[in-house]
Length: 156
Image: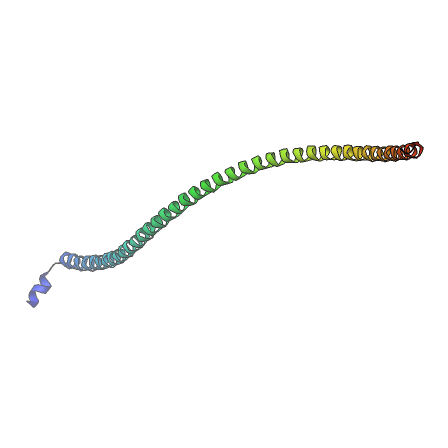
């Protein structure tokens, strides 16, 4: 066999060395590709976990959005009801104010009438006092005349 080694042509050695180098290079490239594949698989797993977390967060946010929407609708409904009651109260207030204004006008009118009647009553009271004085004077005059007549009249 040692004789055979010496018989191998130079190009065969070069080709063998080339094949060995090519095998080493290819092995190294294969090793790098496997490492890159492992890194990409880890990244893919991380991405899947991230996507699952994002999906869970999205679903949670959708639930919260539905709750917020429901609360908003409920609040809008209560607001509309409150606005309706407020409108009714404002209408009642306007009616009450109008009625109050009418009552004030009637009170003012009645106060003027009362003042006028009080004035007429005082005037009438003054006239009554004058008439009472004249009546008293007339009674006194009648009494005086009766006494004079009685004093003049002969006794029977």
